[in-house]
Length: 448
Ligand code: ADP
Image (cartoon, rainbow, N blue to C red):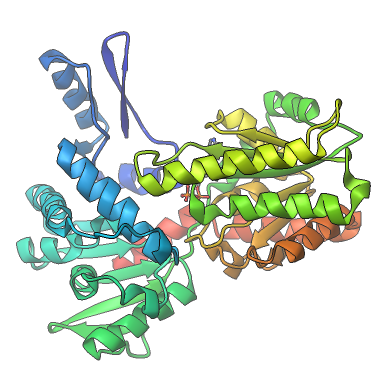
């Protein structure tokens, strides 16, 4: 949920992201509650806040507020500044001091308090993501019999990297308060098992169950999906089709990248691969156009500010070197785009470039085939995205290999129509079968 103040009045909106969509059904059917931080709300008087509370109650959501220090330390510094880079293999992005875990604990304890306050026997509690790794154990202390599931939406890193965290044992102990711990892929699940072995000498049995303080804790792999039917329906709308025609140009093939502006997404090397393509295959000059959309993200964290300038400079350099009076190779949009534009870009793309250096799942890789109701378009996908475990019909690349990625773009651009459609049909079948509703159903069934 997010709160906006419009003409002095607060408006509470449901988020449109994958998680909110996937859980909408179970939330409504089971009379569930959302508990979370709706962001910092400013510019309201007392009646305004009462109005917000009423709207939250109607939406069956319980807001939890964070003060300025908590936002800075718990959210920006520890969660996005320390846990995010370690889980995405980037210890080089770590700040020199990784302190502030007391604030992380305090906020996690507040979540546990609010859950405990609303808990009724028989409830299932589902805790999400790396900001709340301590919540399962803290809630277990407060409600020993609670049924608790935890899902990690980002990678669980290789044990060598995880062991660099000063708080490694404490974080794992936090997770082990759950009854069920879910990961996107077999690889992350394997990393977690290896960490359990190294830190605590415990081993999961054949059913993936670990004995932990006289309780069974089950581990599992639950690859998240997208709302495929919704993407297909929206992609078919005439407003989208009109835009697709505007974006397409019969003289040029369209390459598209859509990401949050994050150093894990591989945007600089992707730009270098496009540059390399133009060097290796000059015949593509003036015949391709690369649209990169990058949503501004986390610009209060130092590592992200520098990164933004790096991308700006690279786009400028490549366009400076190759542009002609009538053609610019890279169209860079540093902003969020409305849903129709996003869908039209998915539908207009000849080649979709999803080349993160590391990504828990990467939903863009699934939204693209979900939108290609015409069975067209080629997906180039990093083997280091969680999605690669399922989407083997994409063209898989090592995003660190710039020359190899450039060669793969060339292959995608010259692929014959039969192979293109065969691959896209297979990708579509996978994302249709494993959509977000199946993901929530599987996790909740296992937890039940
Ligand atoms: P992450 O969770 O790391 O941001 P994902 O690929 O899993 O990465 O999810 C990104 C989500 O954000 C997708 O649902 C995608 O549609 C949406 N998104 C990405 N870029 C944009 C953009 N420029 N405008 C609007 N939505 C975007």
